[in-house]
Length: 143
Image (cartoon, rainbow, N blue to C red; front, side, top):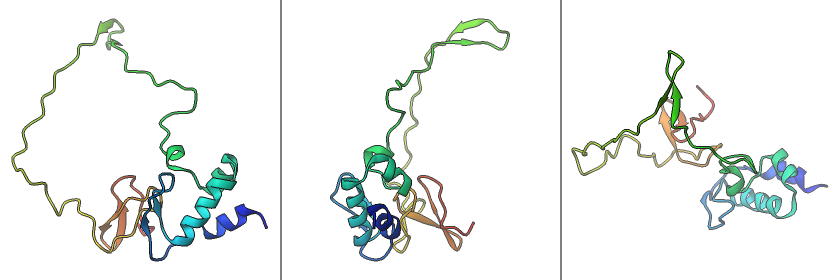
């Protein structure tokens, strides 16, 4: 039986223990079985096979642009509404001082029983009877 079949079956299988790992390519695992099969996929499957089953390393998931494409900065010359060119001038922005030295603890604090996000691995927050990820916006499926 091909490895991709096992990876499809056992990757993202969720049960305890779950959480952070010491592996720099797989930072979060939903279970020990999930970690083992995703590690096998990274070691023995090609990139196209891994993309089909949804197993990518941290570097592959956080790649900012396509390979070979250079990011461009914002141009300093723009077009006014009248159609003429103007020179954009940088604006100095100074941050406002924070009134309190302590950060709000309840506003974005993750709950102890909150599940991990299925998309990005961050801790989810309660939203009514469901959970929502504050990082990527994914929900637990009941919104």
